[in-house]
Image (cartoon, rainbow, N blue to C red):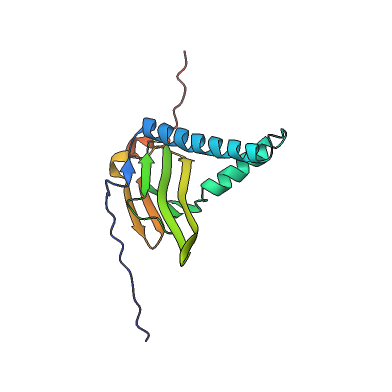
Length: 174
């Protein structure tokens, strides 16, 4: 019989990852939108301010600034589990904001690349960002949300709110 190794992931409420504010999600979205807008305008200017490429400029700016966040969402009777791929991001780089019907995952990390052979010839520095907002199918209990980050996979446990069950109500005759 082969021996098997297992990694145990403890579910914890990591305060540095978790935030419960609608205003915070809105602020994060505004910041990301502003950064993409500035980058798209820079691309527009580098093309000689030729009109007609606005969408192309926007999508190029977005792809240069934001990395996609692939996710899997599973549902059980009492919770949703979101698994997001965030390779290279640590717990200090990521913020998870939760509302009863929304989940936002954002992150920013600074990377520096230096190539030096004698004199400085090339020095690149850029910020890697992620930003993803999800509409949740039903209300979750934000006070019981837990997060785990291990090997570039962010796992978010979103317990469903107890009072969010579907109830059929018969209309009363008037």
